[in-house]
Length: 148
Image (cartoon, rainbow, N blue to C red; front, side, top):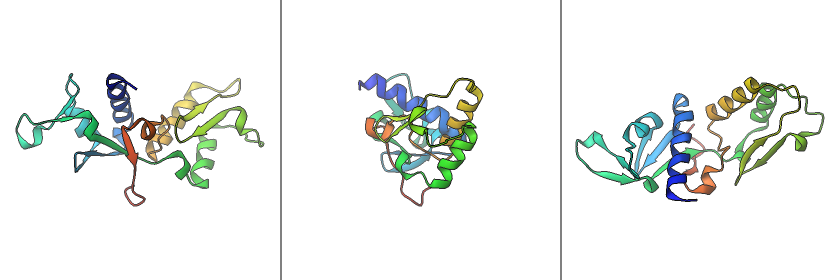
């Protein structure tokens, strides 16, 4: 993954997750996603205006705290299926692929609406699940169990 692709993925992760107060490690400082988004310049750097200086941190020093897919509880998985309004009937392999490296890929049955898919991603964002494979890509790190 190129530096530009990592930057794009980082901005996507921060943008979709800031309403859910996802935590970001910037160097050794824990900040909120919205604060981190405000610091991202058009270059490959993150600006730190809090100290009132021009100190810049490389994007590589910014890591989002996310939970790997494998950390989802049975209750969280049940809630995801409920949000998707899909009757499992033992056929989950037909419509969902879950992997800690590549993330979650949905193949909804015919007749399922985008609205349900959007709600599913909103739910995954709210519980801080890495559905894009961002931990494997190096822009996120596994959240400590007591962080969220």
